[in-house]
Every structure is written in structure tokens, then in C-alpha cells.
Image (cartoon, rainbow, N blue to C red; front, side, top):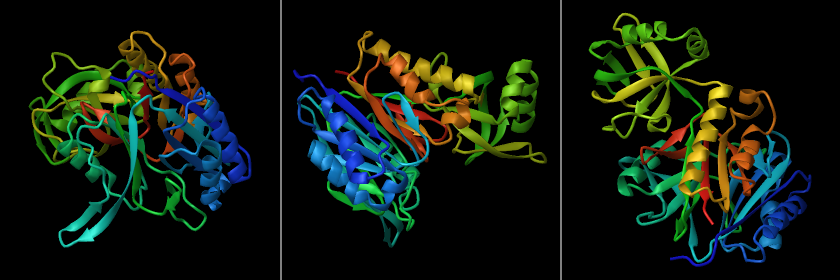
Length: 390
């Protein structure tokens, strides 16, 4: 049982010099640790800093000297209630784990006689949680998440895809004092409680429907009728406001953990409708679907995304008995921000409000990793948050 509280500190700098900016952000993060040494740090670097990522690591080392560090190139960063969606910036997140431990890993895809394999992936059996930061161009994230879910069921996995590269189009992945150009970096946590928060930003509309015939990711029948016809009828049954929402893009929520008497918003894995065949009456979804699965139409807009994030964070505070957490590590989609909400700093300010000012930092990812129904998935337009109790 841990007797020392977790402490978290965050810093953000828009300075133009990568080393100096990292020192500034790292120093601010260190101040939040209350004199305790950092056990682990996450670093997210954006803009012209990606021309000299080694200098960023030098600055973090000078400010924090963390024994464990990972991070990645980012299209944008957030921290301290602010979002820097573009341009040059660095965010540093640091934690003193109060007796818990953090161990880094660097995984890479390799060619094998049987196809693509992965080397260097951490054994996460028995871990409190793991955070993984893959490069989307050189790492098979979907396949690895599926394998980790099978190999280590119940272990929380969170993270995000690196969203920016060097001017030479190489990945920027930080691990320790090195910059690596491919694969995925991550951290295994032990003895550290982490509450996962996944806000897919989409609202359920219409009735729940059971898939009665399917093949792969193609749904042939819903509730015993051709899938396309049943969806069209379900859309006609919506209110005018709901029809306006789905007109901006219809999504389908797929129940992952079945068998409940009723399903809430967080029970659905939200996936895009990829297409429909009017002749066969089938629809294709961005996930494999088995017969017997419950699905429900979803729609995404700024209002539903705001409500969903606040509700998801509220559930984590409720789980903490109303206590303020030590802090949070954040992975939000690069399709959110001003483009979704029409205003700056939405997710960062929402975190600050709902977590009562607890320090939070992270980056705008090219895909977000978080659990639904206990299994890890890669999402889009989602905010995933690792909430750390004190």
C-alpha cells in the first residue's frame, strides 16, 4: 500500500529555442512536485523544435533529470488550461509516483517469415497501467492493441499516435536520452493507480438494434431486416434536431461488453460508417461486427462532445469520492480544438474545471488510445485521459 501521495507537475513553453524552452517547461513542471524528485516525465514537442529534438531532451534533463522519460513529436500541445494547436511549443508532464514505479520500453515492427512482427514490447501482465505513443507510419497499432488486450486482459492501456515529424519526415519518439525514428515508446506503471477516461465525443440517438446477420465488418441484417433499410427507418424516427446531427455524419456505436440490462454512452465503441450497398441492403462499419452484437446510431457535434467529456470526467471524480486528483495526462484528437468547438482551449479548460485545477498536460494526437468495455482501442475525434489519484 502506497503511503506517499503522487505529485504531478506540468509546464508549457512557446519559446523558440528548443533547449531553453524545455528548461522553462521542465522547471515549471518541477515546481509542481513540491520538492520531490521526478520519477517519470512525458515530453511533447511541436513546431520548429522538431528540427533539433535532441536539444529538447537536453533541456528536460537539465531541469528535471528524470530517470524515466518518453514523449513524441506533436502537431500541438496543451497544458495549464491552454492549447497550442499549431506553431512551436513544448509541454512537459512530470510525476513523483509516491512509491510506485515506471519502466520505459521501445517497440518496433520487424519483418518475419510469417509477416510483420513486433519486438521490444513490454510485458504488461500485472501492471497498473501502460501508456504507449506509437508512430502511425511505422507501427501496427491496431494489431498490437488487439494482442495486448488478449495477452493482458484488464490492464488499462492509454496513449496517442505521434502527430508531427522532423523536416526530413522522420518520426520523433523520445525515450530516455535518445530520439528514435520509428516504432512506439511507452511506459509500464506499477503500484500507481490510474483511472482511464475515454470521451468519444458522440451522442447516441435512436433505438438500440441487434445485428442478426453479418460478415466481417459488413452488417447484413439489423433486427431481422436488411441493415440499410432498418437504419433509414431509424433515421426517419429521429427528432428534427437529431436528424440535423446525423446529417453531419452518421456514426455507429458498437457494444463491446454485452449482457447489461441497459447501455450508457461509454459502453459503445464509436466507429464510422464506411459505406452502404443499396442492392444488397448492407452497411460497412469501421470494425468487425458479430451477429448478436447490439449497436446504436451516434452523432458528433460540439455540444455532445462537450457534454460527453464533462460527464466522463465527472464519473472519475465521483470514483474518487469527490477528491481532487493529483493530475492528468491527456491525449486529445487533432480534429478537436477550434475546428470542433469554434473556440480556443476547450478541452484544456474543461479539464481544469472538472478536475478542480489539478495539473494536466498532453498533446494533440493523430489517434487516441483508450479502453472501451475493458479492451484497448484506437479512436478518432476522442479525448482520452489518464487521471492519477493522489
